[in-house]
Structures are given as structure tokens and as C-alpha cells.
Amino acid sequence: MAIPIPESRIARFENMGFGMFIHYGIYSQLGCGEWVMDIAQIPKEEYVKLADTFTAKDFDAKAIARTAKAAGMNYITLTTKHHDGFCLYDTKGLCDYDAPHSACGRDLIREFVDACNEEGIMPMFYHATLEWYHEEFETDFPKYLQYLRDSVEILCTQYGKIGGLWFDGNWSKPAGTDWEEDKLYEVIRRHQPDAIIVNNTGLDARGAVGNPEIDSVTFEQGRPSPMDREGMPKYLAAEMCHTMNDHWGFGKCDLNYKSLPDMIETLCACRKVGANYLLNVGPEGDGKIPDMQKTMIEAMGTWIKECGNIIYEGKPSKIEGEYKNFALEANGKAYLFIHGLNVLGSAHVIVAGGGLGYKYFKKVNRKVKSAKWTDNGENLEFVQNGEHLWVNATGFPYGCNFVVRVMEIEFED
Image (tube, rainbow, N blue to C red; front, top):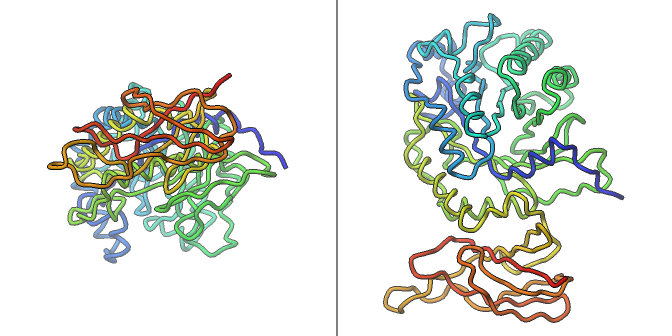
């Protein structure tokens, strides 16, 4: 069976490769994560008072967009409304539980979209479907769904062209619940025909395919698996969303950060199977991105500039490597991603080991002309026997270690 050709918006989204997720709301002031209202069982009448102290004085959309661009991120998905029901946008009278009616007094989504447009970043809107604020979610679900559609229509009509909408929460009700998805997605297609539609299937259904209007499957907090698109009625993209520590929203006492090498390897693992990597930041209560998160994101950008520009246009390859090593292909060339190399230098300063030497790849069905590192252009020795290839992977020059090193393979005509 054939693999369907991706629609242009889906192909464009897939080539973006790397994006920033932002979880920000009135919950950020408590520094206990985005689920604090539910987990700490804070009564609604007490929780909503957080809006009175939500100034967002350090929420600088322009600085955030610049950070994303420096990191090599091509889109940002920001929480317009999380499960607590508080909206960062002007709800135009649907309710007064929004940023313009809080101590902030601003439409943060307006600022966000304008900043993204200035930096050439695609703005996307996270919008929760599960909600704890509007009682109709439990008492009159059809009425709540109309409110949801009206909210989405505001987002689709008040901010110009947007990149897409990312829904989250359908997993909260029993299987078979009618979320009236067709009506919801019709609103988006009517106003934003080129928008990407994502509906998160959650931790228990990673990679599941939902409504026919969905454009990308999701892998929450887990390495994505290869997509089998043969016979699909529509080509779907894939995206993995990932926290830096254990919370999406700001956790002031959460020090369990993933390492930078782990995040670099995760980005590579995503692109190995053609999935985007959506890496989350949780701004502090005043809107500032924590220094550690900002630093690590910018370091990701350093890796991409030196080794990984190919992550955008490179497509999964049939070429197979050993260990974590793999290949992408683009523009008639192959790019081999090599893990676990050591730094070259004196035995007095360099720890022994590091997996230097010849790396084996199979299913190389073209004759290799040359091999070189993308970061410094060093030509590399190789041996090829039919579809079997061994390339001599030299170590990092002293002073460098990019965690994953990329090798460009050029083929003979």
C-alpha cells in the first residue's frame, strides 16, 4: 500500500523539527506546577483570587521569541488556557476570567503572536478541553462544548494567521464521550484553513490516531516510535512533547532537570523517526523563563548550528547504524549521527574510552564518494563493501564535545 502525500501545511510543520512549549498561567505564581489546583484540592473560590496578583510584569514575548529563534526553534506553542480555565487572551465577553481582567490588564496572546511574527516564528495555541472552572464541564457538557467552540473562534479570528491549535484533555472523560470534534475542527478550518490541528492523546495512548481532521499524532514524555503510514487515508506528522524537569508549569522546588546531553539525544531520536521535538519551558509567576531553562535552550541552539541544521530538512533513512547511531537523508546526501565519541587530547586530561574508530552502517545502497564531519569539515577514512559501510569516526578536537556528532556522506553520481 502507498504512503499518502502530505498536505502542504503538514509537510511544512514536519520540516520545522523543533519547537518551544510554554506552560504559563496564574498557577505559575504558586510554583507547584500546572495541576496544583486539582492536586492540592484548592477550592475554586480561593484559586481564582490568583488572578488578582497575576501581573505578568516580566512576561516579555519579544525576548521569548528571540530565545526560541536562537535555539533553532521554528515554532512556539503557548497555553492560551489550561485546565484551570484562566485565559491569557481577551475572551471578548465570554467570561471575565482572563488576563485583561486580571492584575495583568493585558492580552498576552496578542503580545505573543506579534512577537512571533516579528522573529519569523510560527505561533501555535495550546487550548485545554478539560476544565475545572466552568461547572458546565460536569453539569451541562453540550453547553460547555459550545463555550469551547466560541473560545476557539476568538483565537482563530482575532490574531491574524496562526500556525495551529494544540488541544489537551479529551482523555479526561470515558471512551465514547462525544466531544463534538467535527464541529470544533470545522470552526478552525473555516477561519484558519492552513492551521495544524493537534489533539493530545496523553500518556496512555502515545501515537494514537484520532479524528480525520487531526494533522499530527502526539507522544507525551516518551521517545516517539516510527510511523507506519502505509495505507493511511491521510499523511500525519508526529510530535513529541517533553518537560525539562518533572513539571510543565513552573516548579520552584523541582531540581530534577534532564541533562543537556539527554535533550540533544532526544531531539536526534525524534528526528530519526521524522517527529518534531516540542521542548517545554515553565515561566516563573512574573513571566520570566528560569535562567537554567533559558541557558539549556540556547545551548541546544549551539548544537544545531554546529551539527544539526540537517535536522530540519533531513528525512528518515533506510540506512541503519549500531548502538544509537542512525542516518537522515537530504539533497542526495546521507547524514550519519554518531553517539558516544570522546575528546582527543593528552592522557593526563582525557578520560580513556569514548568509542572512537570505525562505525558500521548497513543498507548503504549507493557508492560513497566522501565522508566528513559537518562541524569542522574534516575528511574521514571509510571502507565500503557493497551495502556495508565502515567510517572512521575521529574524536572531538580538544575543547569541543557536541554529544552527537554529524557526518556528511556524499555519493558518487
